[in-house]
Length: 67
Image (cartoon, rainbow, N blue to C red):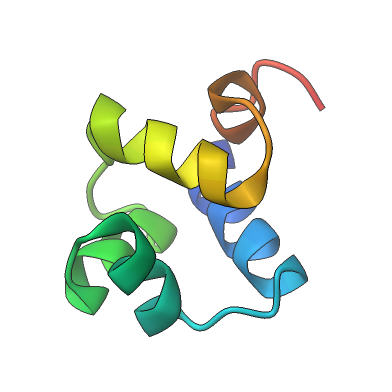
């Protein structure tokens, strides 16, 4: 698993959200969001921005540029 997929899952669980809830908030399907967490595909920059905003962190953190 990539750093991104691991951090997406960890941040979602920390926030107490389901995959469906996150998907609805960032305007993608649950299936699409699941693929981000399972490292089957990568989110676009637009989606990364929405995820960073949702989890109140930076894109750099999500992609593993720092801890």
